[in-house]
Image (tube, rainbow, N blue to C red; front, side, top):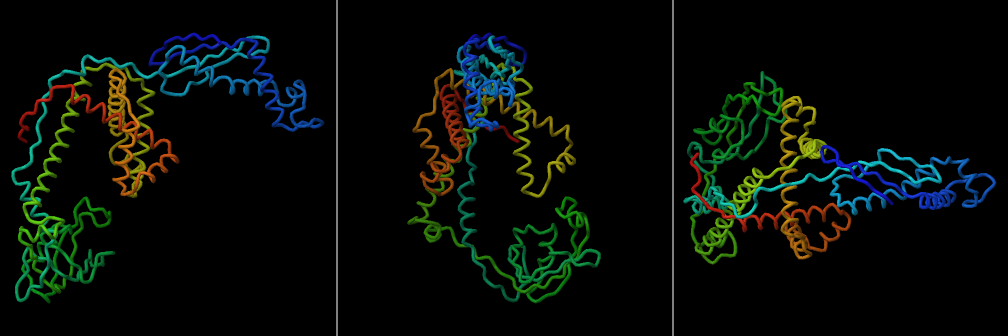
Length: 435
C-alpha cells in the first residue's frame, strides 16, 4: 500500500492511498464469497453462485463497496500510523477509483488536532489573591448550628414580632378573584426568613393570636406566573398561633447534640478543620485559574471552525437538557436573550474549553504525565463515596458505559496536570483586592 499526505488549511490533510491490483483482486474475491452467503439467487444454493452470476444479480459496484468497507479501516489506520497523523475525527472518503485489474486509488480527508506552542508553562512567577477565612466565620458556623436546633414555644398575650414564627390561615385574591393555589390552612411561616411575596411577612408583625385581618401586597414584575406579574393582591389572614424561637446556648450540650463531640472545644476544632480545608480548596482553585490564564496568554494555537462548531453543538445539547427540566424550551431562550448573543457566548465558551483541553493534553504529553490504574481506582472510590455506594457498583456501571471510564480518566489526568503546574510555578499570594 502506498500513501501520500498533503497538508491543507484549517488543520486538514488530504491522504492519497493506493492498494495494489493483486490485493484488490484478492479482496474482491473474498467479498464475492461473503456476499454469496447473504443473498438468495434462484437456482443456486447459498454461497454456491458463480462470481459472474453474483455480479449480474447484485452488481459489481455493490461488491466493490463491500471491498472498500472491508479494507479502508485498516488502510486508514496504516496511513495514520505511518505518517504520525494526530486525527480528531473519523477519516472520510472523498473519492475513489476501483477497476478490476488495476490498483484501487482512494482520496480521503482527515482533520488533525491543532498544534499547540507554548512560550512558557513552567517556572513563572504568578500572583494570586489569597482567600482568607473571615474573622467571624467560626461565630457564624456556631450560630448556624444553633439555629438548626432551635425549638418553638407557643407565645401568649403578646403581639407578633419579626423574630417569630406564626401559624396562620390565608386566602389570596386579585381583582376580587381567588388566586389558584393562593390559600392554605395552618401554614407555618418564619417571619425572619420568609420567602413569600415582598411585604407579606412584614405585615404579619404587630398582631395577636386569633386576629383576622387583610393585607395588601403587589406581585413582583418578574414573578413566575405570567397572569400575576405586577398585580396588586389582597390576602385575608387568620393568625392562629405565635411561636417564639428558643435558640440553644452555644456550649458543651449543643456540641453533643451536633455530633460525636465531647465538648464545645472538640466541635470548634472540627469546624476550624472544615474552614481551613475550604480556604485551601479555594486558594488551589484560584492558583490553578491564574496559572491557566498565564499559560493561555502565552500559548499559540490555530483552532479550526469545525472543531469549535462541534463543541458549540455539544454545549447546546447540554443546555437544552438543563432548560427542559425547568419547563423552558430552547426557542424560549433564543427569544429572551437573542440568538446572535447566545451564539456568540457559546462560541466563546466552546473556544475556551477547547484551548484548555488542548493545553492540558499537550502538557501531559510533554511531561509524560499519565493516568495509572491507581489514579482510576481513586476516582472510582471518590465517585462511590459521592453516590453513597460501593466500588463494585461503580465498576458495573463502567462496564455498561465506556464513556464513563473515559470521563474519569480525563478528570484524573486534568487533576494530575493541574497539580504539576501549581507545583512547578512560583505562586505568590497577595492580599485580596477590596471590592
